[in-house]
Image 1 (cartoon, one colour):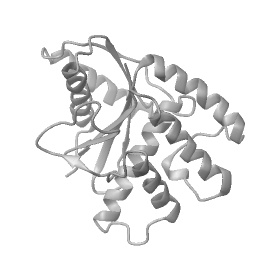
Image 2 (cartoon, rainbow, N blue to C red; image 1 turned 135 degrees about the horizontal axis):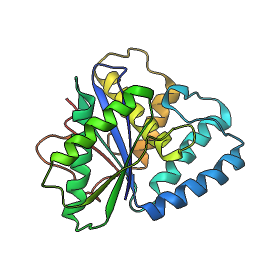
Image 3 (cartoon, one colour; image 1 turned 90 degrees about the horizontal axis):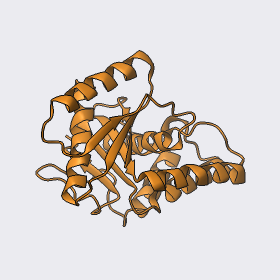
Image 4 (tube, rainbow, N blue to C red; image 1 turned 45 degrees about the horizontal axis):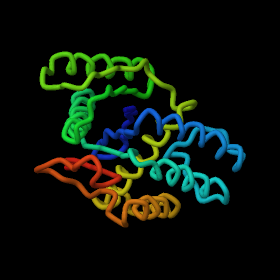
Length: 221
């Protein structure tokens, strides 16, 4: 299993997010994205902050997300945090491990953090230290070298959905009084890929089952 983590810290509710997908499907997705970029002639980095309602660029973002979520094992997970990002990252990663252990997954999980310079390296090291202290984890954990979202499409998916969840939370909490139409339209499209469920729907007293929902948020407070 492959897990890529990213964060959005622009608004009051800071969000740590992660995509998870089987290694086999991750390889297929990355290959499919190569063809998708050629079809649309778009080769730049996909980021939530770059989203605009401009012809084939917007259509490409939609197709990008649709392609990711068509895979059986593809999921997005998130929670919120106030201070220690590495603690939030560990809690999120631990919740994914817990979901996988519950369905009897016995392979390994590779975790990849966005590079984000020295800060990214520090967060990755601190999260690894927490993993090493956790004796309840039965699945083999592999911490990848930091990834660069400019070349790894799965990290770009994490950025895009994490940004969308954080943005809608900010709209709901009146931090954004004049929402960007393109961003709200993409949020609606994301929700349509998950049975029209609210992208900010959150459980606080229990975890989602791994296959319950495509977008799984926990404790967005």
